[in-house]
Image (cartoon, rainbow, N blue to C red; front, side, top):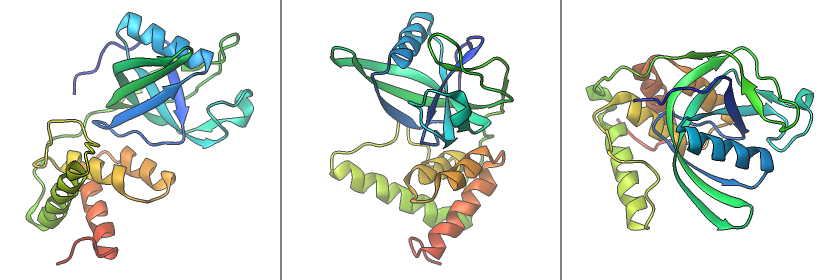
Length: 209
């Protein structure tokens, strides 16, 4: 996954969501600080960082009331639509993961930023093992059913032959707590991530065998 050059410091968008590499993220942006973030990223052709909130709100004012995860995912802006004055609809794609040690809030514009960013390695490509075949097939069937309803939740190309891609797409769909999704996203071994997802699906009788 080819990431753009990172700005320094990296602007952060804390959300009540866990973004996965390769995921599609839609945002409705109306706060002045995030409108400025989007404008600057578009101008410079750089991504911003999405981090999951553990406490507080992305609209919160005091940095002390906000706690965010230390691992997030870079977001590339793909499309912007100004649906009305002061409101932007932004479509992004998740790129690679990163780790931060601190995220101070800037005075003036109120943006959270990461002065130092450690890029994490992208998932190595692995074929799903034979034991994962039903989980792969179940995802393909879910994609087909969603398409029949006019919904395409995942960015193409579909990589059903890649364990990390399959695991990440299931993680987006599964109704599990954000804390669990965060731990899955942080796992460095995509085969283990897919195995955990497979176990969950079998426990919930989504797949059998």
